[in-house]
Length: 464
Image 1: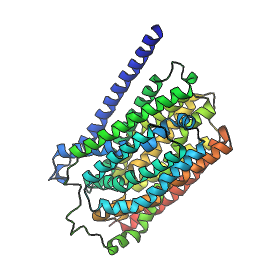
Image 2: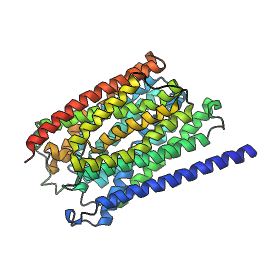
Image 3: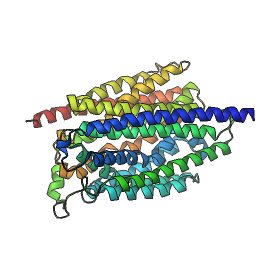
């Protein structure tokens, strides 16, 4: 009873801290949404309350839909590998199925977003994705996991992604793109941080006091119950979207005006700035996918147990809201391209520190400092790389189509980054494989810096 009482007291304090942190964080994020709505003249037909609720729903849905396919594996990667009895390479290959299906779905999904309302598309996408969570909680075989990830590639991309981006661009208006996308990704990051910390606490509570002594069956049961939590949140997000996102405002115009001709699509395909934006997303998203390795890196190199390794990933999520919001504000002040260039330069530096083996495995504080530094630039980039459509000269009516094209190019790391990570870490055990992997990330960051510089030159020529 004494141990149980101590354990309950510890978990109670952890839960209270999470609630307080989440409330404080959401308060800051919601204040940011209110601050971005002050320009009532830019949106005369929309009340502040409606705009507030719309962005709140976009934030909630934008992270909840990716919780099942990505957050579970990112936060609990070491546990997932053991429970599913698979290697890191097998998991990476399974995620390649998601990437292939998503790549095929991005462009048609963009066209759909230019024809149908975000409210309908996003609600359906969330509900159907939640059905996959029910199956995921049964802890299927590797074959079943591959099919499930392919299924999520359709639900999250064909029905959801471009609709969310289009709605956000319209919400931001002509002079608030940086703030709109910064708030979106910052809010998503805050939700991800709360989910990460909350689910890690729940996962730890489901294990014995000494997490390292937990049996495989106990870890499997804890993981399954954690997946149910993510499934419930996905359903909740669907309800919020349906209640809070209006049919008007973010939706396309009439079907007659919205018929996309090949000539219109061709204007997007022939725009070199759009292709460069796609390359910027590729290289930035590669850095983001590299963060999947953090928990495994902490276990393999620093000797962390499953719970401590999961907490390393949770720290990265807490950086995201502040980094994305700050990047959005800076982008509106100095320009999106300049901010992106600075982020890539810092990303090269951070990835190189790990690639060169400069972290001391006996000093965990070095790991956490590097995680914070890399997370800042990675999430800063994610907060603004869709905020430069105006710089690229993309008409608002073709936002969905442009999002589809940029995403087809930009999210290809979903196909190849998992196998690369799995091959390097399985072939070169210990620190060596992880250092090679971060060397790959640094190389992609160099490519991203070059593309951002070229994009800036094109945008400067287009400016009046």
